[in-house]
Length: 231
Image (tube, rainbow, N blue to C red; front, side, top):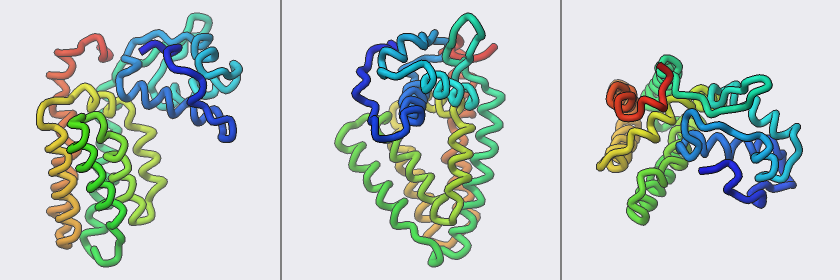
């Protein structure tokens, strides 16, 4: 997808512009609409979004801080290649956070409200039945995990996880295969069941199983898309 392809009417002038541009470009990078290694024209983006250079520069700086773009002085900007080492580090962080969240809830399930997470899972199931598109369940998938962190009062930790997860999330976008959506939905259901059953070890195991598949496939992903990865 060319950075200039979309129109600027996606920007709501009543809300902070930088955050909107950041979110749009980040989502396109994670979804591989802007593939690793793609050159980014700042002027084209300014024209696309109908903004000045200043908010565009700030949005790109935020993307650079998350390791999603590289800004080369005097030469341009490009979507960064996938850094497997950083992906492993962010995955370690995510498993640590979500395992502890799961153990906390499962240790006293009546103390925590799981209705939001259950509602999101039901919505994911409806989306899958209606679209048969594994990519379409990505946004509520993220919301599901966020809801569990929020349930124990650690929503800010989830935001930290997200900020560190750009590389591994891009690998998840590559790692789409027949049956993956069903597996995700089944693993979410298993996690909810473990939490409600009050079984901390089962809940921790569910988290590990759910989050470990993509990095186990790293060699296959790198072999299939060598131009997407740092050497």
